[in-house]
Amino acid sequence: MTPVLELSGITKRFGHVTANEDVSLHLDKGEIVSLLGENGAGKTTLMSILFGHYTADEGTVRVEGQELPPGRSRAAIRAGVGMVHQHFALAPNLTVLENVMTGTEPLWKLRSDRAAGRRKLVDLSARFGLKVEPDARVSDLSVGECQRVEILKALYNDARILILDEPTAVLTAQEAESLFATLRQMTGEGLSLIFISHKLHEVMSASDRVVVLRRGKVVAERRTSDTTREELAELMVGRKVERPARPPATPGAVLLEGVDLHVSGKGGASLQGISFKLRAGETLGIIGVSGNGQTTLAGLVSGLMAPDSGALLVKGQTVATHDVPHAIAAGIGRIPEDRNAEGTIGDMATWENAVLERIWSPDFSRRGVVRRAAARSATEDIIKGYDVRGATVDGRIRLLSGGNMQKLILGRVLEAGPDILVAAQPSRGLDEGAIAGVHERLLEARGRGAGVLLISEDLDEVIALSDNIRAIVNGRLSPAIPAERANAQLLGLMMAGDWSAAEAIEAENTHAI
Image 1: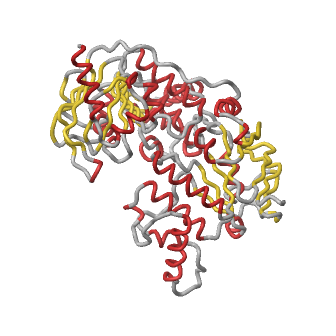
Image 2 (image 1 turned 90 degrees about the vertical axis):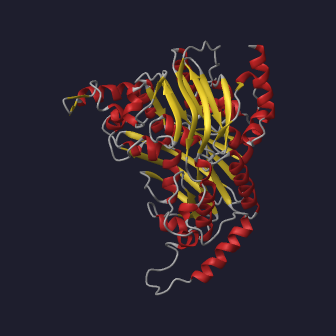
């Protein structure tokens, strides 16, 4: 049977960098193929060539035996290829229906047939279980709902081949499970899917076959039923991957303390009288379903906002001025949750982003003049020390993959030697090798006496790195439990608001003391 998709001998170079080298793969009807690889391995570049965003230097793309003209997205769409990008391409001020219909009707048409468009959208939504409200404004949707809209946009264009680039990177576990059920339903309807992900458990559960890229080349292909997570991790990075073990903690003085903190906000963005302590040499893990106040907590500690009431104490001193420069001066570093919106400025050079948060320090400026040589040297050290692949000192940071962008942010923060580190979703979108590296760096910071506030939706990550764990639910913090007592079931109950077991553990620990 002829494959629905064939990529043959694809090579793509950007200057002296070879992003893809002689890559060939195929996709059969009703099949899900996972494209796996390290950050910067060339996965997104390859899919951009398939969709017509880039033109390959060598090689061909065929859909159902017909060669696609290179560099023409419209031709790919007409051939039945749809792509859901890692970063959504939706107009937030438009409705769901308007976003889905944009670009689907000829410009010379005097009037849009919204009634027919609505009928088609509602039918697709019901057929594939992608529930959305056609008249809802995109700016009012959750992240999971926005992703449904992106998939519906592709299906509205009659896509038979769907490319999903890191589709679960910003989804909760529940949203990801719902997505996988939808994908299986799609293949049952005859669609074929290419699924790009770094999460090996998702690859194992969602795909029929796995193609592994390393440094732009295909290094392996496996039936999912014939491989293991461990083998895929080793194929992906070229070596055996082991995440570091957390050594016993020796907590010191209290570095950060919140006392009855209240922050008003919409829904789950508020904080409702939370109190906590973070000690030197300790990692406090915060878990919770997205939207329950963890973003607000990170912003408060990082100086992005001020509390309505309550007190935040750093090293025993009440924080009087809540802004980022004062927070940095007080020894607080942050790994932001959204590296694109909050962590970097895409059109600025790598070296500018690498020193942006400390540009006013004597290390990088003097009498208002930026010390470019020092800034560039520090950036080179970060690129080498944190394995930021594809980065050049003067290159635009938006050209980096998401994972390599995250590595640069990590290096920028940790090289400053913060006493308090706010790490929000630090390994989101990273491959197995990079995750192990991030975990090692966070444990090193803890080992030298820093207090780490770890905010993550990855329960395995929180259990592995934290000394104590608390859940945040509707802006309130649960009692703390030691990581040694934690498991997925207990943490799931805590995230759902059932704190009885955590309260019993806290009482037991208090009595023991």
